[in-house]
Image (cartoon, rainbow, N blue to C red; front, side, top):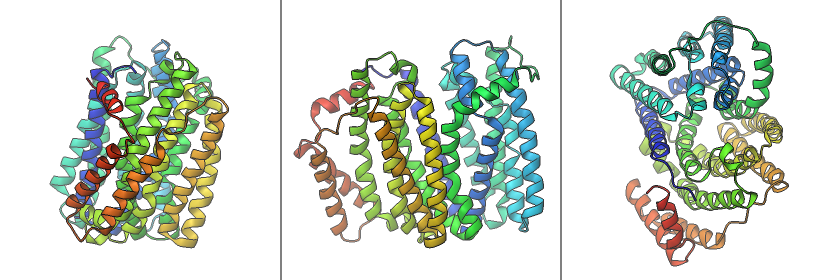
Length: 465
């Protein structure tokens, strides 16, 4: 396997640091605003996410690929023009809808302030630098934005009365990120001054929509429970669900790290032989199971201690949601392997169809789960839907590429069972101590049972050296 470049390691480290700062921001917020208000904040972020999807038309994927293939930078002006126009329309729709449908002034204010971020996002040229393979620019901008958001929250949010500063901080950080990337673009590519131009906009939209369908559907379904719970239940229930969801999404940085280590860019994979690609995916799948399965088992057992330690006693009810939703993390990281394989062999259309079917499954299960079982039902719907998506993607990829069964899987499972048993029978201990004992037990069992070998560890380490 090829060694990771210093640039890739730096980018991954920056992304992990950014997620950690974001998680610390959330942990701080949950202790300084009410559960209801935390629910309102997450509804605001969800509406912003949907607004960005509605105004982007899948341009990020299309634009990055076009720049990577050497297309004229004139495309920048066209994409910016369409996004600016679409963003203004979407923002006006949100503002009008807020006045018409929202009676609570606090919720209205949060949603309106957060939604303004669609305008700076329209000028966001992260996709351009992605196409130029200058991911360090994107990583630095996002990291700085995360630090600024954290700083605003720390300095200005001291009580529930300061809730609006959460939205203001989010808007400031998003605007700053767009400005940083824009400044670097003008400095390094100043000869390409983007001009408002809608020429060829229709053909670009027609090409970009299918390309971005999969990622757009994934983003829609990931955020669906927040809106469904907010509509069918209450802001308090949204807050309870969101605390568990934020922790699970934070854990998904493991997905990012494993993907960076083992899964090359699609263009590079296509140059490999099918046997090489199969070996890469198989090895990545094994390491994902090794890292993620004990987290899920341990998280299930220690869910109450984890939630109360991180978010506070007010979120104790989130433990039941976390106990279910953490298995969404396991299904998602495995799903990454097979979806990466599907895209690597150039089957974007099949990937898009699977994601469309997945979105339908998500909609049905989340709505039914919420109606019947409440917040826990929404979490269960997420897990079942993601598991179904994983199985469908596995079946479809199996027809195109062979991904080997996980080597020594029974020994990995034995190690997890022993670890889980030890953690379960432990007396009441500080969370950190319980985690250390569980981790020590698991790692010892991996080596005792020879579930992993020293050669595999050395190969993994060499990826960084």
